[in-house]
Length: 214
Image 1 (tube, one colour):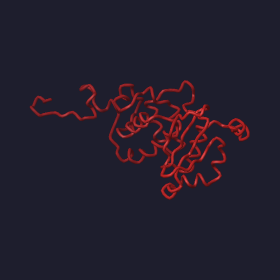
Image 2 (cartoon, one colour; image 1 turned 180 degrees about the vertical axis):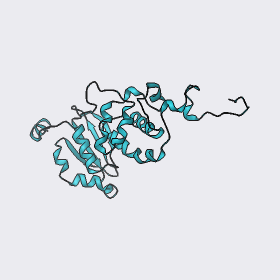
Image 3 (spheres, one colour; image 1 turned 120 degrees about the horizontal axis):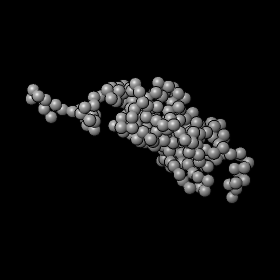
Image 4 (cartoon, helix red, strand yellow; image 1 turned 180 degrees about the horizontal axis):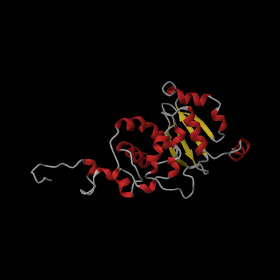
């Protein structure tokens, strides 16, 4: 593309999908690498505990990376920023203050829609935390959780020690079918406990033992 004076114009790759008549102000965005790096990992952990997919995580990170908006993004703007607006529920944004990320809530809500059901959490019948004891030195927070009183709160949680395995949580439905596997090597004890409180069905100890008696 050449200007009238013969100068070659190069469009920024971020704007490659935009109409040439639209400037960057339509996305209300400015690059902020420092904030992106600061919150990238924490947001991944938080959204994984809420059972959200990678596309939603990447979407919110992209909004954070490319800037701040003064008003709600359109579907087109959200798509240009890297994710489908319809996939982000506002109840997910409401969870951010619990993790001291109140300042990000407004950005999240620019591309979310109201929940119809009022809840996005998946509930599972059983969880199995698998890890090798040889990894305890590398994951002291996971060791602290296992050795504490916390697992006793969850009669439908099982701890399994498997040689060489980094810590994971496997989640099962009521028929014993594996539904999801979550890597937890970067979590702390509070994160593990909150995840189980959120995603494990609440059961009475005696009822669970009777139901699963062999």
